[in-house]
Length: 353
Ligand SMILES: Cc1cc2nc3c(=O)[nH]c(=O)nc-3n(C[C@H](O)[C@H](O)[C@H](O)COP(=O)(O)OP(=O)(O)OC[C@H]3O[C@@H](n4cnc5c(N)ncnc54)[C@H](O)[C@@H]3O)c2cc1C
Ligand code: SF4
Image 1 (cartoon, rainbow, N blue to C red):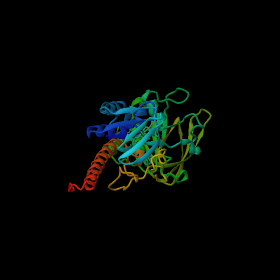
Image 2: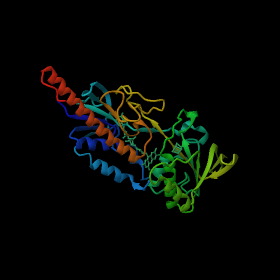
Image 3: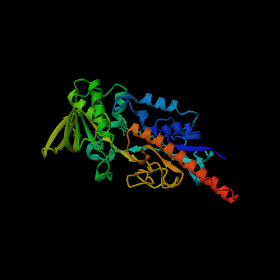
Image 4: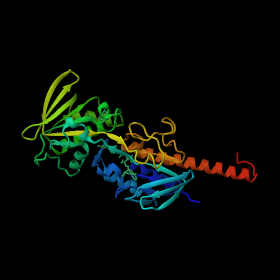
């Protein structure tokens, strides 16, 4: 009889889960569709709230995989059977029998081209927060001309809290990410002016509020409570932003060299049909109970972790992966206990309780 758990998705949540499952004594197969493990975090440079090096976090998680069998460039095409007898077929036609399955397939970025009025993919000097992180990593925050920008605006809530794109939820990480990248830009380009245009500032975690204060007091980052109605390009490729300052209810114009769109998270429900999982209108997977069974899906034996169930920061995703591992261990020990009692009952041996 197999003692295996299959984990689908090798981001921080999936890797954290694998390590714990191995500690609990399970054989673990980690299936990752990309060529490398790490998920979105492998694209980040320094991460909030403590400017930790993203590569170091990933190296630590990879180092803790603890004998997990890793299948990269692979996904899952079929999941058959019921707990604790699942049969998982991979895209390489390998058949794996497993007692339980964990789905930790993360999120997608909001596609900024849907906000045409912000000019992404239309104007050269409009980029997303994902592209900005790559520039920071390369120590090269530049305009398309190759010059250093002197004035940058960051637009919060791009693709989040926005009825027009049908994403009403808050992506939770982008305010703190904006604060973090603003500080990093100031570290790399000292005389650059930075304006963050926000609806509300949501910096909820430990150390986040302090980072927000530091950005203003020590780095002079400017926060404007305002809505960008439209960006247009000027002949020199700089951008003119038409903004409504919502604190004083007045329209204003702001000229900048570079416009950064803080794109939000969207659910990735690609496995919904294959794993027989439900997802909400936000495309994140639904859990069995949001209060006390947040790693259980509605499909017995198939578990969920990380941003697959909603926006989370790295630390929350790692913790959620470990929590899912504990839930799986609990579920399987209960299951084998019940199975043993059932067998004993068939053999007329007295119950264990
Ligand atoms: C712009 C931005 C900046 C951020 N910066 C920070 C920061 O500074 N600090 C912080 O704490 N948090 C930050 N975050 C949040 C952080 O990125 C997430 O918490 C983290 O990536 C979540 O990890 P995950 O494992 O849940 O998902 P992911 O990182 O999305 O990983 C999921 C993995 O599953 C794989 N996968 C998907 N589908 C399949 C499939 N069908 N089969 C097999 N594999 C599959 C993917 O390839 C990927 O490797 C940021 C988020 C954004 C959007
Ligand atoms: S975290 Fe901030 S930027 Fe992101 S959606 Fe929420 S309010 Fe908007």
